[in-house]
Length: 131
Image (tube, rainbow, N blue to C red; front, side):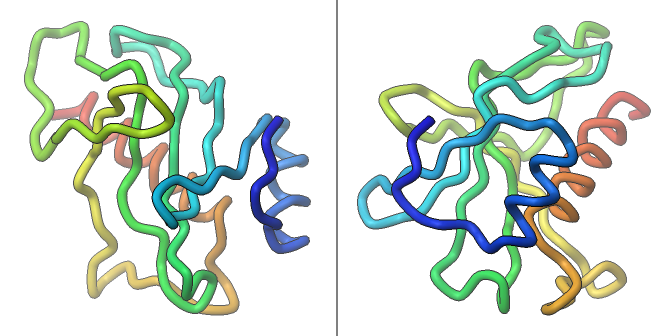
């Protein structure tokens, strides 16, 4: 697994507790956390994807925003998923999900981290299944 940058101890511990393999890469000066085999809920065309998070230079004081999947996800129901754009990363074509925190659910410096963002990602995946 590639480790081009160091995660905070808290992030490494929570990812270990989740049993998620991860890579830390830097592409074009941007830090990315990549989960090569991230589980996707039933109802999508893939049950496992590479899933990426862009890590801002100001993290953990500032939020992690959005999520990126490779290969691209689609609902098996045939319903469309909104706010998607392609994004080239690590020699692959990822699918960017434009999802953001809200005033009702803001980033909480000192409390939120990679693992709380993954909870958001899981919530976004589940929410699409219910539309």
